[in-house]
Image 1 (spheres, one colour):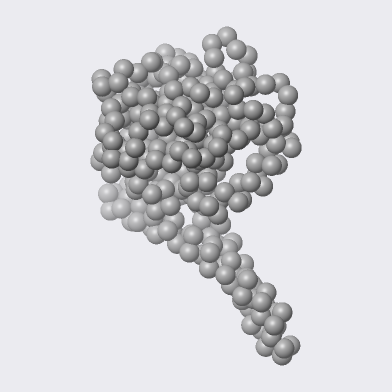
Image 2: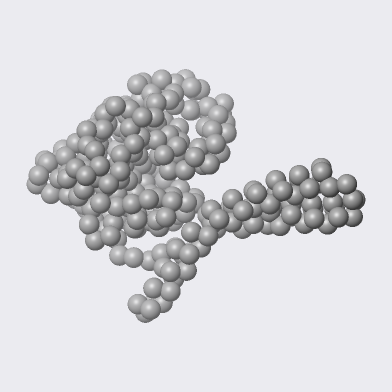
Amino acid sequence: MTPNAKLIELRTFRRLMRARPVLARGGVVLVCLGVALLIVVPDRTVRTLLGLGAVFTGLFFCTAGFGLLFLPMGPRRDSRVTGAPVAGRWMVVNSPGSAVPSHGIHSLAQTFAVDLVHVPEGVPGRGEPAEKGLIAPGRFPSFGRPVYAPADGEVVAVHDSERDHRARTGPLGLACMFAEAMIREAGGARMLFGNHIVLDVGDGAYAVLAHLRKGTVTVRAGDAVRSGEQVAECGNSGNSSEPHIHFQLMDHPRASRAIGIPFAFADIGVEDGRGTCVPANDKTLVAREPQAGCG
């Protein structure tokens, strides 16, 4: 593919992503207007034409906006190599090494995002409690684990006031999470990411560390950080089924205006040795304990 073709694809993708919320919100407004017209307009013919016309047009806009989240295409850009934001053994979930978009949707620049769940040495499975339902986050191995800056950079945004809610496991817990997710979606990045940090890591790339533990963020906007510096702890804030770290790279400091950037973790332990990659789903990566300032 030629450079110009890449540029056209990137521009088109960006425009579609920015049009998506406009379509969705406009559709909701039209549906509400149509329902109001069906109720208040006395003339039956006018009520039917205007009311149903607005409702169906609004539903079309909503469907189009929703459908853009699942586009099979995506921006093509060289992967950025970063350090892992964690240390020790972590299971990889919702990995771009298995599918793109990795979380099933492109919204909030999550095209190449990855989730990491801590798995202690010698613990079967993921070490989660055997019972299902709404479980205290402190019972999961990931909760409270250190989170590190993946590269040298500058903090551009911090949110640290969301509670660490109970984990949602089992059918009932997951049903609660999906119902809550619809409300969080309307609230944007803060409600979905929960406590999070956005870092400017240079060359037009911004790293997001999300679902952090409340009260553990040690940096503020404007602070300079070094690769390997601890910046928070793993929590269970935002749209999270259990304590884990959500990591992504994007091309704008605001996730609502950004598109995702592919990445690879440098020098991590994988099943066949050490390498620079993003392992596939359900694989375990082992990251060395970082040394701040040696990025």
